[in-house]
Length: 489
Ligand SMILES: Nc1ncnc2c1ncn2[C@@H]1O[C@H](COP(=O)(O)OP(=O)(O)OP(=O)(O)O)[C@@H](O)[C@H]1O
Ligand SMILES: [Mg+2]
Image (tube, rainbow, N blue to C red; front, side):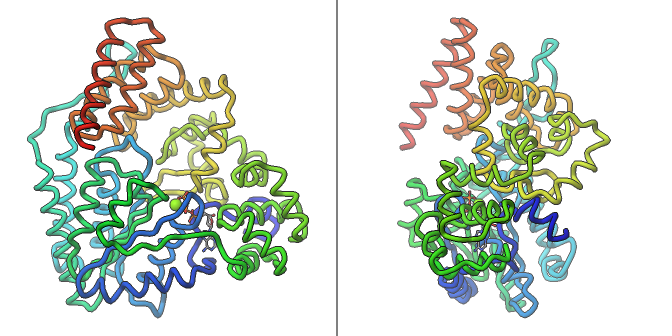
């Protein structure tokens, strides 16, 4: 990309590429100091902080340093990102296993991992994870009574949590011993672990409690009271705060070619020291061709009520339109559904993918789907949709998912998207049954948070429809879930 085009597009809001990573020297040292302990007896570490503080970027830097840095330890890294629930059961762990299988099938670590039959062990564990979640997982999607979409569920053999846990533990042991034989460690990185609902959260806690030698398990969480339990288990903690003046100057220089004075750096440290806000400020300065003076920064910050607003105004108009039109979709965003939402034909998907590659607003996920470069931007767009636009976009999204549902991976995610968009489109007659059904399945499985969210939609739909029987069923289900939550607490 040439310089002029780059400043039109701006620096991406996606996690920072390792070669542009700035500052965080103390935190980097803290992480690297854990490596000998990972080799000796297995080690977990938690990176935490508010949205936009740089958790994913630090994780990405760690992955690079361990695996790809030319004079680094060349240790294999497998990683996954957890998206907001409701989701497929164990979706984050299944992505980790997929990444491990990719490593075992190709590339630098193929030989080590193949020698231990890791690919087969990962495949076996994945099947157990899938079977364990099967009561919530539709085996097919079918239109019911003309125009209502339902999942077709089978009753497969039960695979208890203990078997899943044992298989995962065995897999990690196998990996750890292979690594020790080759004088390395393996790093398992899980981003946004605060999104993991039950039983994923259980597997996370059990795993970090009992890591075998040779394994580093690093995960990020947003500051969240629920994760105090992890502190209590003695897991080392790397909390992230705003960037310091010198790191801000480094970022200005390295990523934006801007010379930041001491006075400007001090102002930024005080007012907009989190990296997301810094990227937004610097992008806005570059786009408007303003000098990085303290006065200009102050004006920019006064203009918008939040950094995501500043970020949004600094992107070109056509990206603003795409961001707004796609803001209601939950990641991973399937390419055909995105194209459909944007009014493109199926044949335009490749052209769309080419354009997305240059975007500061969207990022490509492993497997080919997309996400917003940063969730703060998506949230900003979502919150500013007018009521009418929100209803219309939800209707379009439900229609697009229904149109492509048989070609998309992850049946449950498709069904969950349709359930959400039908409700948002105020198509209460079709939303009620689907949300109620899915809510019941998540309830039976013990994922009460997802169950409650879905069942609340069914309650609201029944109220809008004035359907007394449906309302009684939905309210009854909500009471059951509340009791389940109270019992677990
Ligand atoms: N150390 C850094 N050097 C340069 N840029 C950074 C650094 N850390 C973060 N950034 C940039 O700041 C923005 C936010 O970072 P990141 O996505 O890592 O935050 P996060 O804490 O993971 O946010 P969230 O909680 O919402 O996932 C990104 O645009 C990223 O490129
Ligand atoms: Mg992140």
